[in-house]
Amino acid sequence: MRVGLVTTQWMEERPGSAREWVPAAAPTAAVDRISLRLHGWGALEGLGLGLLSGALAGALIGAAWASSQTVVTMWDFFAIPDSAQPSESS
Image 1: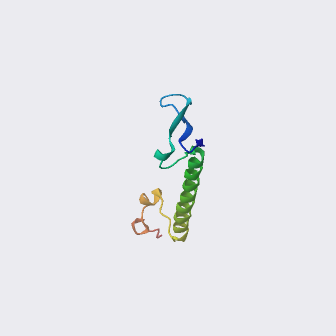
Image 2: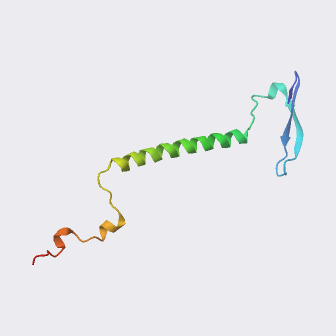
Image 3: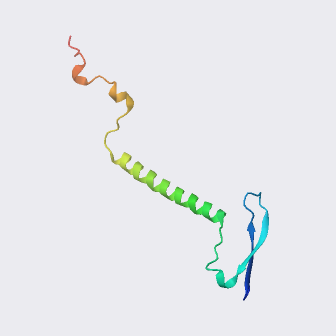
């Protein structure tokens, strides 16, 4: 990128092309802002946020599970309660 007194020049990717870069220019007085997109950094930020939120959710769920005194499993729904069991008296 070259910012001159009269003209600002840069390279931009041609739309619909496979990484083909073409020169572009605009009058410096017409340039409001310059934005650079760094996709690699965005991907790393997303990965970091995902890891942190996943670790936090896992810690909260693990702490809640560990603090519960009873663990209900699928097989508990099919168990016969002790009061319904026949008593063994001889």
